[in-house]
Length: 194
Length: 404
Image 1 (cartoon, each protein chain N blue to C red):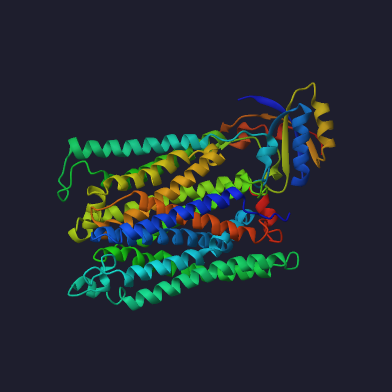
Image 2: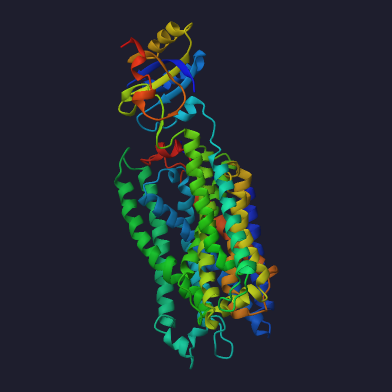
């Protein structure tokens, strides 16, 4: 939880956004995040984001599900409550396979959804600062982390990248739990250039 | 971009050597096995030919199916290497012809004591079960069905290629051939569903054990054929890339082919197990005999080997992203999968007529080598006949930019 100062630039086209992101990465300013109204193909490469490890987590959850199902059923049907089903051996692996498969899928799916939510900091009730009301409508928003020293420099730089709108905002950089109007100093940001 | 493929001397020599190995195996087999007084040795001569011809035919037809499926889904990524499935598909008539000759020879030319040991429904006698199935399993139906099925496959395989070649000389940005292909694809899926996905495996393979039946059988055979077909496409793509062709095919395309191999290995296991489990669970003697000889009898080693090669190896080796993007790993797995599904067809065909007198030695592997040689040479010849890049295809740009 930290209040930080941001220089925010808005673009009205992804054709402008890509060169701008490239320039920002070369400029030395610290890029906070980019917000787009729809998933933009190739933006993750342009931002230099590393490949996710979500699938490794998924594999571990799946293996856990497999082990849970096989182990639990083996214990039940051999020692806890052995029952004779149609003369089959107590430990009948083929009969366990469907449930093992289902639990593998269930553990992997639920685990990956929760991990995905954790990695992206999304949950019901979790709030994050909105840099521009139109960032989920028709504007592509780039936010840079700045200090008092390079504020004007950052704004001037962003204007050269083709931004249609720039502003400086002091806002919470992490997520918080609650409501926008109470905790979020939304009205407090100063618009340098409208 | 007008890439032409010319058959390198090494490929020609290797495939010719394999064909010669196959012919030698066939001749020696004809002398020693067919001339043997042992009925099982005579049966072995025919059933091995049947096993290989049906396997290679169904694997080739799966390459027509992937073209039809991709065309109907308007998938672009296949366009980058579409000459490969086209060449394999247009080549179906070669294996179709071989299969027709072998199937008819097996069905009508092979009798021991007035009785066909492979297709014993040919002469039902007083067998009530075979009589009950005789409206489907009878010689007339067998001939008609086999000829019509193979003719349709061979025709559509060549048609798909002809449409694709015609697009090369069409006006730029013309989509006439694209939609023509779309219509033929819909028609082919209908044909394919009624043949390979249902009746053909019943007629050719399941009828070897005519007393037994399984409703999962055709899906299971389709799974086998499709995953082998994708592996075959991948081997050709990697080979052509190694020869310096197909520059537009990148790791992204290979990655997606690897995904298909991975996914359909699991699909195959799903159908394989679904068929097995219901029969294991209900435990009805007339159904379980099929699995008793395979799982507990003389074939148990091959039975478990198919499971390890076709399920455990793909799921463990092809699961991670780097291994699907590594040309060596995917090529190795493609060869393993093709061999594994060849073994799977072995386990479908052999136990019925041969009982415990099975072999997996010079004759089986020699015939396999011969068929592999025919596949290599005939597909390579088909590939030389046109440019490897479908340069006028409407989706070519999207195919090149493909991200897996």
